[in-house]
Length: 44
Image (tube, rainbow, N blue to C red; front, side, top):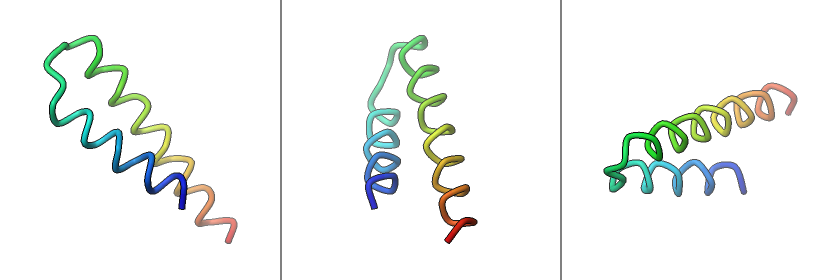
């Protein structure tokens, strides 16, 4: 459940962020969290 919450929070941050560098970092964190969630779901 924690990963789903993290993904939602990152999406929210990304939607209001106006700084390009920060947007890139948030987007990278979001992709990592989504990959972790996918891996976790495959193990279950």
